[in-house]
Length: 268
View 1 (cartoon, rainbow, N blue to C red):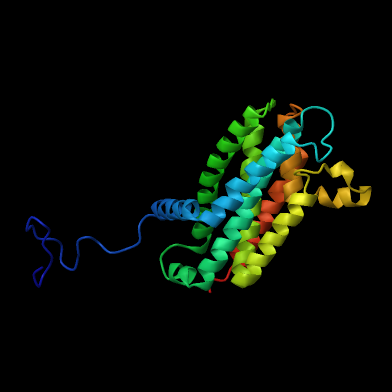
View 2 (cartoon, rainbow, N blue to C red; view 1 turned 120 degrees about the vertical axis):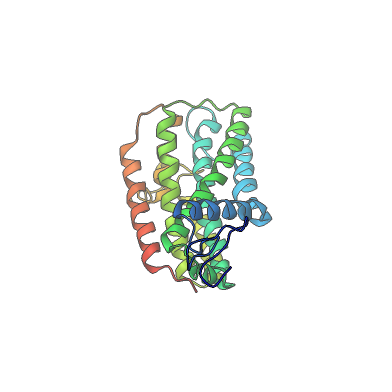
């Protein structure tokens, strides 16, 4: 570099006051994509998260399909259980796993360092949600193969299934990030696992909602896990079209969860 300008690798003079490579942030889309890939690799390398997101749903699907423990109504048990287990997979990845991982990232100062980068807060949430979607694709493929091996006979419109899974992911991702960004890491760990267990029992995943009292059904039916499992069951088991009511419930939870997370999320 000379006093009046710069020279590139071949010795050509550059404009005065310029540097090569030019400093500055990468394009926003590239930053989100890079962060999403990093988040996905970290998630897939975490043995505890894999236990929660893959092993537990798989065991529940195989166990309750093979053993007559819960009355799932007429028809094969796997036809009732498979949609609920798909909903559980979304819950475990987008909410429980993400809340715990992000909570400890916040505790150890990872998010504080990211806050000093050009990556906006909403872009970090977008990247985390995209990484969750990548993991969920692998989960859905694995659980679908196992369900087919158990005799599952799905019906319905694949587009409706995709819409339910995407909206469910957005809803649970927002709630998980809200929890991770407002509570301490230890509190997030305990609360996320407790919510997972409560929704597993009372969210229509394994136990049908009509087994609960009428007053409880009206409340439980408004939960995102109930809307997701019921919507998937209506489509895949009963061959229904677009379950607008369930899609509406998930959309409301997605807007509220992501909006609250964007507003209240604390980086440290």
